[in-house]
Length: 220
Image (cartoon, rainbow, N blue to C red; front, side, top):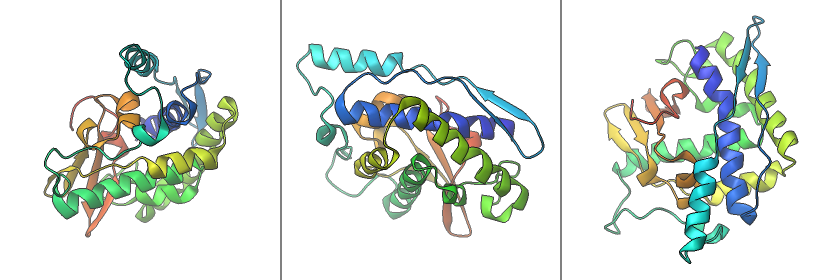
């Protein structure tokens, strides 16, 4: 549970970094560490991930005459290499759509983003079916996002619009599990997430983001 909450606090830093790079190519002030408390009084402090890799990638691209932060180019859907359907077919795209919907809702500090997650304490059930976890989620996630938005002085609505245009195409599906990796991401998110993956699980026919297994450098 603790890792899932810590991941929830880290996500806004990643998303804001992606949006800022795609928005104007400028430098985003480094965010401060986030500290939040759960409803049981447990303090959770998370140091934001380094964005040095993303900055270096942008610099290297500029040096070689490639794209330099153009939002339209950066948010284009990744190619599947064959011009056919997305990886994983309909199920893969359904999982990808949930991941993107979560990002868009989350960057706006919308508590309903919690409804797209699996429970912190029992990842076999949706967050909405775990009352205690849902309460913690609705308390912690919006606070974490709002804090990062205020610290970086950005327009949350504008960032959400950028993320809506940042397409995620398909996912690797294995039964009721799905993984979105860099091959499914646009350049904008590839630069920030690197080799980290987004894991999802299908419960009763619906896909949910599994924070406990997401934002790791290897497929869970």
